[in-house]
Image (cartoon, rainbow, N blue to C red; front, side):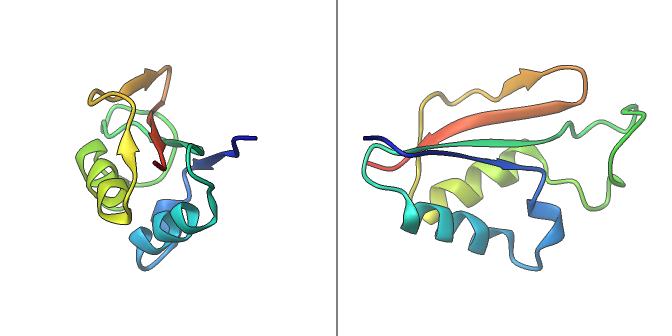
Length: 91
């Protein structure tokens, strides 16, 4: 059985966001997937945290790759109206 998990807007609440993804990678079985979702990096977004603490999509992708994840697709998934995300998996 594949384990699937989601991480929703948690990265800005941790001093070392990569630790979150490293732990997620550790607990997933091979073939497990993680849906990584965060606030859009756009100052016109009427809600959400300040721009100074929102991770850019490129940062989240780099954190996931550093933790050992592979990406299903290289492009970020637009999740209107205020979020983006991508799917990472453990080989």
